[in-house]
Amino acid sequence: MRALGLMSGTSVDGIDVALIETDGEQVQSFGPSLTVPYSDDVRRVIRSSFGAGQPSELTRAAEKAVNAGHVAAVRRWSEEHGIALSTVDLVGFHGQTITHRPEKRFTWQIGDGAALARELGLRVVNDLRRDDVVAGGQGAPLVPIYHAALARDLPRPLAIVNVGGVANVTWVGVDGALLAFDTGPGNAPIDDWCVRRAGQRYDMDGALAAAGIVDRARLVRFGEHRYFAKVPPKSLDRGDFGDAWADGLSVADGAATLTQATARAIAAASRHFPVPAAQWVICGGGARNPALLRAIVEETGGKVVTAAHIGWDGDALEAQAFAFLAVRSLRGLPITFPTTTGAPIPLRGGRLHLP
Image (tube, rainbow, N blue to C red; front, side, top):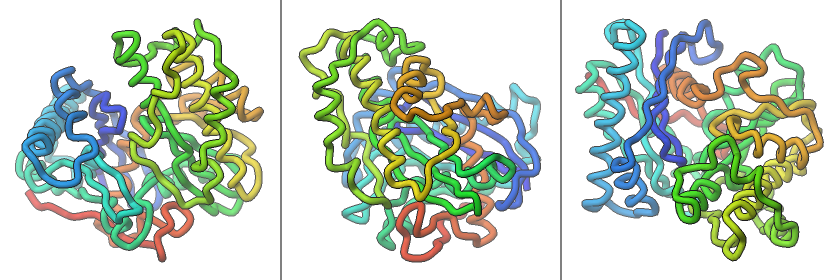
């Protein structure tokens, strides 16, 4: 089945579009991908809805912007790659997470799947987290079953880390066993610090962090956060870890300290692994930050490679995953599991919308 995946993460950088051919168990082939950045205005509209618990003018405006952006991104992908949308069988639409509170059995990904199906003339599967959260699961991470499909022929045990706004890890055992959870902050605190203190959206190439000195005392206190000792399953909202604890430091020192903190949180995940990972694979936006990669090497003390190094498209991986999950949803296959989200049993999920 030719499935198109759409992903907009908590970093609110933009929309990833990626095509794969899959039966929801294995990936037969990878198609082209595209990233379409959000404009600053759209980014502000979306961020204004973060933390919402019920519909409002702000959330409706944000959802309208999200849908319009996704329609435009898919059409641009089609035009740039010369692939007619009529040849696509299914779309997996993650939407945009604005609030994630599984302890309250609540998660909210804005994005109108029915409207997207009408606009594109394609079948769309969305709302992939809700059933898991309602059943008592964390609703995250959702990507581990796709990670397992990709890692079939790789040496294991393996740790795959996606560094978006929040960072999450999938541990894949020798026998294919899965363990997954959010490790802690990803790019979000670093991005917020750069916006607030440096007047830039993010730390390009880790230049600010590379120029700064890590405040080791603050880093030690950060590492004592109760979240890191909490046994999985566990997940986070984007706002659970902020950047205010770096206040008082210079711009560069704050960036360096927040970057090292993200790496320390990733390394702390290993205390929950059944056996140590032979290799750490880093994907997501964080894989493009050399300062963060150096910090992860330092903190884990292990072999660290990027997704690109082993032939994966790290930028498109999450979008590919939602194409994969959409096919599983259509086939009635489970997408979340007791060891990935804490679901009581392997659970199906998603809502199908016809054009």
